[in-house]
Length: 116
Ligand SMILES: [Zn+2]
Image (cartoon, rainbow, N blue to C red; front, side, top):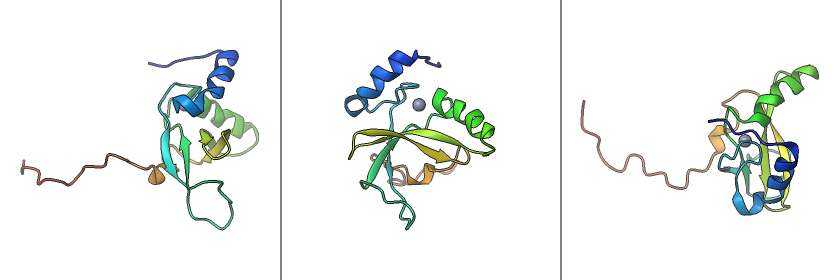
């Protein structure tokens, strides 16, 4: 189900992100994201929080916004816990950035799976 919020609702929800850790645009829980090691960007903290919902209204709108600026990419909603600020983080495709998602409850490969 797709949630749509008015601009005022989004503004209010953006102010509460530090408590909710939910995307103000689509209400999806933000993923903890480990910042990449790059000499080009100075990150303010080790982790950021990003909305990885491909249906997110913000991410969806980003494609046409960037296209109008002749860029074939979009951006996702990002919350910076160090500064408490909200930013747009560029994403070239749906898959960009995903490799750095921190999976806190990663319990794969604990047991042998039965052969099918
Ligand atoms: Zn979102």
